[in-house]
Image (tube, rainbow, N blue to C red):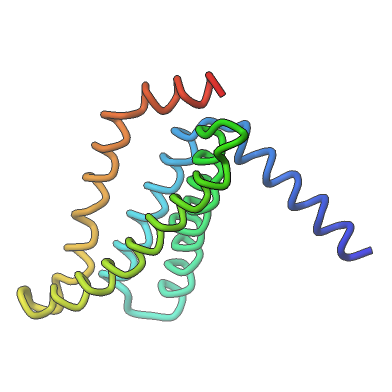
Length: 143
């Protein structure tokens, strides 16, 4: 019974990721990311930490799923395995470079600038998306 409910929930979420345009998910996740980084910057109590964790789950967790779904939508059916592997390769590179850069930042800047420096990356991702959104939308519509 529980597995059936989970499968139904999982299918519903999958349909949302496949049908709602990437730009909407991206906007939601960018706002959540800005929110959690600001909360981590000013955090002074557990409530702010719990709220930051929830926003991080949306900003990062949802974006990972949406990005993977979009990568598969962009690839022809016979190349979806390669698209999935390429997606995870990029994710692994990001997961390794992020902590490396995060470890270097406090050696260059005072520790109080750690989260504001992370916030600097958010507009860069938005610029990348805006510059490529037409090609992304056209590719998703085509497939």
